[in-house]
Length: 510
Image (cartoon, rainbow, N blue to C red):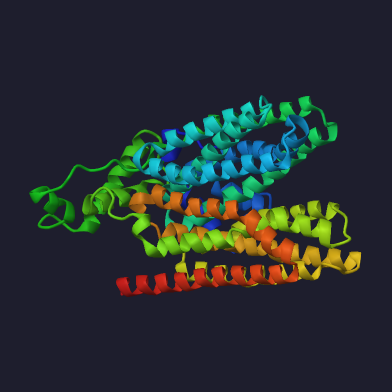
């Protein structure tokens, strides 16, 4: 499964069909797996998630990102599980100082989201990702040395900033490395792997919680940082084709006429020639991948429209998408803050139910993120799944609210049902948002656009604790109803935006 840079394998055309089979139809993947030795499953006759992901990671770029994510996100799971308790029990920070530390880290992440995408358009995206991942890993190592508020604040800001910067850079790489119908699938595969790895890391983090000593906490924090650094072994193998195309020199006169096809040929031939050249260059150095054609398209666009023809800051539609996604993204705050507090203070259910909710969410994401993301590169389909997510999330809020004050077993049933609909709302909203964020972006500035989109999520994550607490926790049923309306409005707004964009695209191509 591990991709290599061998010239013998990089030029084989089988790479693209493997990814397309997994991305375009779950049924096709299952049928191929059942076909025996000739099928995608390698003759096991047992189709499933592992088979589909295995087919996907035969692509050089995705295979590298999957294995790097598999390693590093175990460290992330450790970090998430023990950090707050480490600050409280080991470092001795009071609650308000912990809130400041976490808030500062989130704020740094907002700025870094933009910086990561911006740099990925102007420098080697591979090198930017390597630098950010290295600094994030070193920052995690430094957590073990924190002993007071100031040191904790500095380390948290560093880790938060470079972590979000790496995420934006990774999204830029996906936007540049894959064809439209493959991007969302690739993102879904990475999210599935992320959830599996975080679950494993959470289990390891539980060891520190069980032992309870400062040494146990610090050893696991060092292990978390080391896993990020270990992932670099895979990331260094990313091909040069994922980098932004180099800017062409200014074009004037005859050069401009040649670039636009006047008296020389049409733009289609120009773009095609660029793509062929890119493919030959990559094949020659053993780095052929699906990145060649998107990169060639961006190069052709640059020649026609200058270095940066568009900016996400002057794209009202993309800014609207970013804002709507940020609002709906606050559903993560419902899961991480609202539900635990609601269970603890408004129901008679055991706190163990919080863990059960997390397990349900992780299981559904792992099993369904890839298949339910299929086809969301289509604007109308992305809009429809966003609308479904909106209705599911609105219903989820009301069911969570209804769990309060009931006999314990009824509360448990309501919470479990709500956690199931919540997980599906999360999966569908992510699938729709990814599709729209890729398809509505200018390919010339893939990194900058993805940085703006990631910034929106960072803002939503920063505001979520205050919003969820002020509504659901402080206002009870009325607060949950407000959240239901907010999520419904944002999801339906995304649906309307997608329909409008699709109609406009159809008119242009008609």
